[in-house]
Length: 262
Image (tube, rainbow, N blue to C red; front, side, top):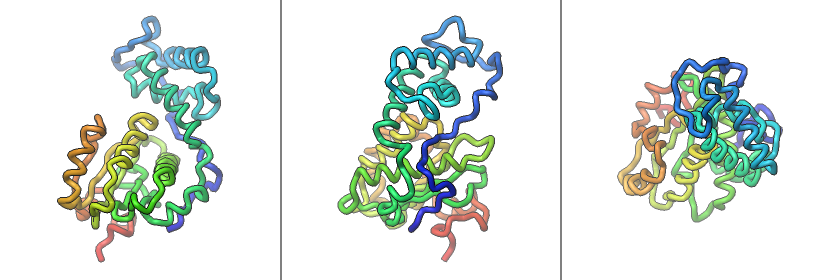
C-alpha cells in the first residue's frame, strides 16, 4: 500500500488553533497553579510559559513546534488546565521528544517499507463529524517480523499526517483499530502502549475517540492488561462492530474500502 501525501515535503508541523482566536479576557473559570497575577488573561499565561521555556530550556529549538510557538503553548496550557508549571514541564518534554525522535524528518519515503504492509493508513475522507481518520489493521501487525523502531516511526508519521488534514473548527481525530483476524501473533502490548503514550504526552487532546472493531475473544486479555496503562484515554475507547462503523461514522461514499460490504 502506498501512502498518498498531498505535500511530499517532510512533516514538520502539528496544527494548533491560532492564538489570535484567544479572547483578551477569559470568560471561563479555570484553576491556575504556578501563576497568580495572570489568571484572567490566557495571553499573559502564554507569554509566561514562553519566558520560562526560554530561561529554563533555552537549548530547545524555536520556530514551528518549538519553545516559542505560541499556538502550541496555548494548546498545552489548555491541556494542563492553565497551570504554567505543569505546562512548562509537559511541553518541554514534548518538544525534546519531537527533536530526538526526528518528527520533522519523517517523510513518505522514510516510512514506505512499513507502510506497504498495510498495517496503518490515514483515510482519504473525514468521518461524519469532520474528523480525520487513522486506521490500524491489527492482523497486519506482526511484531516478530517488523522492526519496532520502524513501527513507531510509521505511527508518528500517520498521526502527523492525520492532524495535517484537520479542517477549520476541528481539533481531534478518530482512530479505528480493525481487529478482524487478530491473533496472538499480532499481540504487542508495547506498541499499543506506545501509541496511546504518544497521544497522551505529545499530542494531548488530539484523539477524540478510538474504535475497537470486531474484537475477538483473544483480544480481551490484551485489553485488560493494557487498559490501566492508557490513563484517561481508556475512556475514549468504544468496542463496536463493522456495521456500527458503516452506519454511525461514515456516509456510503466516504466509507473506508476495508469496511465496505463484500
